[in-house]
Each structure stands twice: as C-alpha cells, then as structure tokens.
Length: 147
Ligand code: MN
Image (cartoon, rainbow, N blue to C red; front, side):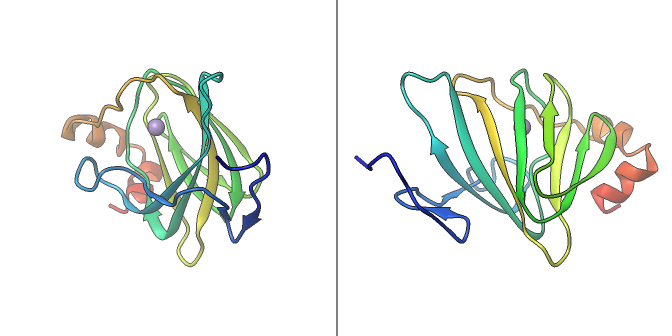
C-alpha cells in the first residue's frame, strides 16, 4: 500500500500505473494514456489523468455519466454537443449526460487533463455514421474531425 503522498514527476505519479486509454480496438482513439489517481472504496467517484500526445484524440462518445475535466497541460480542442472549443491549462470543462464529446491535442503539443467520473457508470455509446455526419454539418466540427 502506497503512503499518503505520491510525488509527481513529468506528469507521472509515483506508484501509479501508466495504462492504455481503453482496450485496443474497442473504440476509435489515438495516442492516449490513462492514470487512475484516486479510487477508494469510500468514494463514489474516481479521478483519472489522461494525456493525449500531439495529434492524438479521445473517442467520440456519449453516455449518461457526467465528466468533470480540468486541463493540466498543453492546449487542444474539445467538441461538446456539436460545438468546438479551444482549451488550455487550468480550463474546466463540464460534460453533461448524453452529450457527444471528444478531445484532441494540438499538433506539436500534448494535452493532459484530469477527469472525474462516477465509479459505477454506463458504457459509452459510439455514434452511428448518420449521427457523426449530423455533427459534421457544423463546419467547425468538420474541421475538428479532420474532414
Ligand atoms: Mn466520455
């Protein structure tokens, strides 16, 4: 059992596994790692740190559970509910239930963020081709998707 303090170095915390973002092939994503920072039987939430390498992206998804996100490192964009926002260090992002969302790191710079979620949460849904096409009707989203 680790002690109460786990030191931080280069966006990796002591005694904390550097994990894959998701199971490979389970959903589209690119160049992300995950560290579970806090998970305790007495807490109903867990806090994770995700880092997206330059040019990488998270899965485009939606779900009933809420995300509370705090950017710790770098700059990038997020698409939330059909709108695209630039985000940088210390910005806070709330993702409401059943809202399509995706994060991307800027070229040349990693994007790192904390994300708090319920321990017990529903499985993310992926968009159908039609749902993805509907989001891309907004030119900003189309550009965000790299189309
Ligand atoms: Mn999500």
